[in-house]
Amino acid sequence: MATATQASVRVPNYTDAMVTRMVTEYTASPSRDTVNALAREMNKNQRSIIAKLVREGVYKAQERTTKSGAPIVRKAELVSEIAALTGTSVDSLVKASKADLQRLVAALQSIVPSAS
Image 1: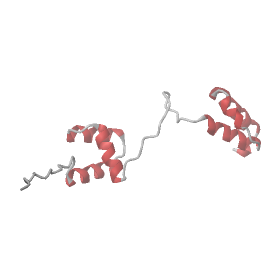
Image 2 (image 1 turned 180 degrees about the horizontal axis):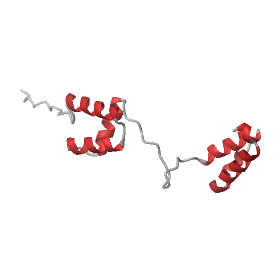
Image 3 (image 1 turned 90 degrees about the horizontal axis):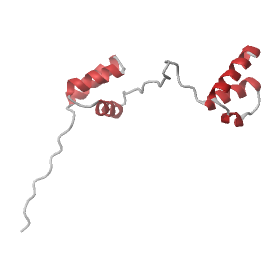
Image 4 (image 1 turned 60 degrees about the horizontal axis):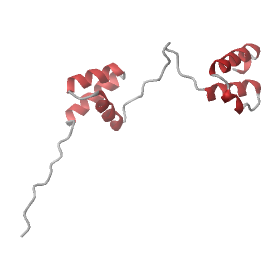
């Protein structure tokens, strides 16, 4: 006769009440501070809270910024803007430095302000 084994019971990390509270608080104030506060209150790490909010479909990733607080602009976006301003394909400009591309965009915008 085979011996009966005890079925493993999975204990959820979050109760339904915890999930409801997390979603309610985060949707009211979608910020990293809210995530940090929820993590402290629920004795979970921040990544766990974020993962649960993502799974619930409510988490919005914070927009990445530079050290100065300006939004991050990729070189490819600058090249696309240059192409739009000049009306030509300039794909090889991606190899130029970002500072040079930014200066070129600024110069083109001052010459052709109606295209931007």
